[in-house]
Image 1 (cartoon, one colour):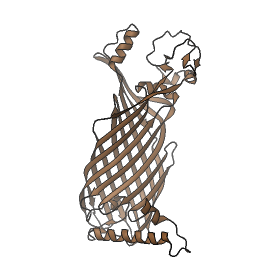
Image 2 (image 1 turned 30 degrees about the vertical axis):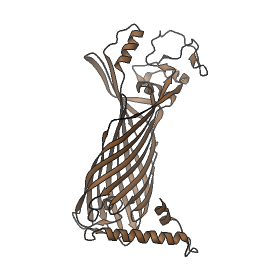
Image 3 (image 1 turned 30 degrees about the horizontal axis):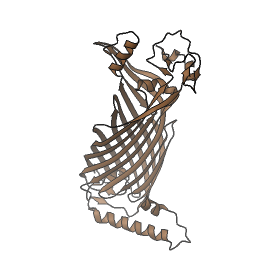
Image 4 (image 1 turned 60 degrees about the vertical axis):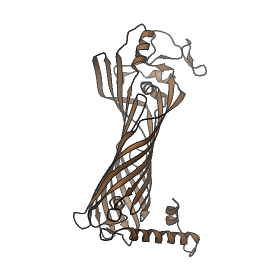
Length: 407
């Protein structure tokens, strides 16, 4: 960040020999000499024009899948309290949270391997994307931040009793309040063959790959994500999620992969990089909620609960919870009960889960003109984590084009 600021900080014409101008000049000279020193110029060309401005349209999608299994013993105990034998009853489900297909336009500005970019979504609720990056002959480091919310859900529900079961697949579900998703990602890699192979040539065009070459890569990354569905209108989702209303995860990943730059013709470059990663640190914190409605309350449908008292947290008949009204047809469901819904926190739980295998894949094609370039590439990240009997998988992918100029 200090290097980046020292490069892009505006310096007025009157400040001919200011500290900022001297620092900027020294940093640029160091970056230029370091690049020329560390690469084999028969394979990698270092352009004389170091500045780049890039326009980046992008299509992005995040698919979050949450799977949960309700505790069989809990169901059996509830059955006993109702005077019913529910031993052997099993319920599991999977929910998909799909960000609307996001189309965004962004600008990236950089000097050599340092750069800063911002993209603003053009579609509703698709949020924003911000990144800082630094790349050299033998390393790359990118920090990115994304935020969005969604109410587009679908669910797979499987209900079975002993060896007989029924299921509902891909049923659209109406979320009554948006679910908020945020991610922070710090991604770094080391290139073993940095003299002849450049990852940056394929993805920020700070240099130009002139001959085909490949390299093994060592990757380190830090990933943080949060899913917030704690709005009171999502009480039924929270109940089906074993009362989990917020999930926060921190992962430290280490990976080993391979990248290859193929130069089929002069000025053309094709790149593929695949890196499986292992989450050696996987910490999940969940916040649990309870509500004045519940799936597992067994009362007469005709019982008069009266009104809800938020101070005493009980209904007029003295009970804390009443049955959650369910309907076989969600489109015809009476939602008037939602005006009385209240959620409140009942505590947090933190767990370090077992190791997880994740995936990081890149692919792209670039054309280099004299003082300009054009590129299209895609990236896929797959993350996973779990807490007790809830499992979460996130598939984050995008396809991005870019047109840039050098000056």
